[in-house]
Amino acid sequence: MSASPLTPIDYIAAGYWQDFLAGRPVAGGMAYEAELHHCTLDESLASLQRIDTLLSQIRRDMMKFGTWNEAVLLADERYRNFMVFLAFYAGRVLAKQWQYTPHWFGEFELRKRYPALPLLTDDFYQHMAVVYRNDVEDTDKPNATDSLFFALEPIGLRLFGHIDRPFQAVQGGQVASGLYQAVSARLPNAIDNNHALPIATERATKDVTETIVPQHSRQSIQTNTDAVNHTSYNELQTTPEVVQTEAISAKPNLSTASLESSTAQTTAAESVQVNLKQTELKPAIKPIIKEAPTPELFSQLLTELDEIEVLQIAGKTEYEQARKVLDQFEQHIAKQDKPRAQVTFSQQHLAAKQQALLKLQDAAHAGNSAAMLRLAMYELLGEGVNADKVAGMEAGVEWVKQAASKDDSRAQRLLSKLYYQGFGVPQDMTNGKYWLEQAAKNGHAEAASLMSQWQQAQTLISTQKQEQHSLKRYQLLFAVIIVIAILIFIIV
Image 1 (tube, one colour):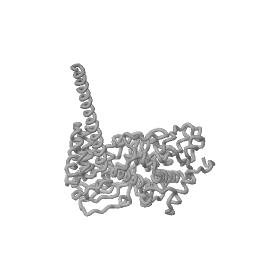
Image 2 (cartoon, rainbow, N blue to C red; image 1 turned 90 degrees about the vertical axis):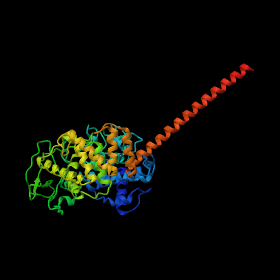
Image 3 (cartoon, rainbow, N blue to C red; image 1 turned 90 degrees about the horizontal axis):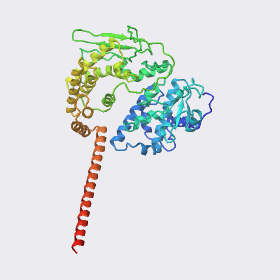
Image 4 (cartoon, rainbow, N blue to C red; image 1 turned 45 degrees about the vertical axis):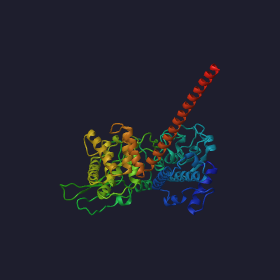
């Protein structure tokens, strides 16, 4: 691989990057260039999460303003340059983790070098790929394509993927839902096929920790509430073996978890530092996740809770304290290759999660709709404060309804889905449509887009019925005229 000559795309990739750093426009222009500069593209894994957030925002904005059209945008050179630049950047970040210089192949080189790849000529997302590591030398080996990364695929899925527009990976399996997930799945020496977190080198470990645990979460957090002393909660790690925990001293670049719980019976909370035992990891590439651990219904809710702001007056402190802890669990679960119910945690972590859920419940009782929704999610998943799953399901639905009654568009959209799918409630299309309308009225972009599409469909159906009715009238009139003509002919 290292002896391969530079391709035209290698020069283009280098040119795009140098132009971006120097603030020079690329030929043909590039959409969202200013927003990319705000993402701070420092070649870290954390920057890929910032890009994924930007892509999600672009998607919502396009849906909101009625410009969400893949074919139209791919015909626009500025948008094509935008996606190609992101692909070049993701390849650059990934190759850096492997301490390798990225090498780009276009469709011609790919077909010549990897004839077994099922490339589609008219697929924009498959027309280029990067070689990001040098441990697969021969292209005739069965795993030769493991060193390839089709970086445009997760970008396309993030922008345009939906139930009627699935993305199929040219290398097989499911396309990752974003650049961060796609790159993390390919980090070196860091993947256990069950559930080890991607930690490649000391530098990669630092990047991942900074990505998953914000700096302020790694420091002791002082609050104005005497009853709660919340401390840092670092990245969680589990292994396929039984999780073993022990108290340790914090060290740089070592993933630990510091948990501090408090109860009404104690006068001071104890700080618990937990180290989850790691097994020896073999150099391997993590397979692309075939099914997300968390159902889409709730993974979308978590995204909306972070990205759609709804004014909250009560329970803000309790909600934020609970969210900081629960986010660590969710970020870890999201990286697994199995359903969330099969992900195991130590007793210390489970105790910390239970304390966070109780804080969430306090915030929900105080009237915080975000807390209601998050608590509802855990109850509906069977992970809430209710031990009985049936009671938990009922409580979850009630929390969603309470939040929806407070005009929280996120809750109204979720409630419409519950009714449409019959999840936790009897399936009811009328109620589903009602709550979808309410979410749209309160500014939920996806709900507004769906209502617009529904109204267009209703208009088409109405027009078709009118045309059919008119045709029947004309046919009847024509038949009457023929009958009268026959009678006149007979009489005359």
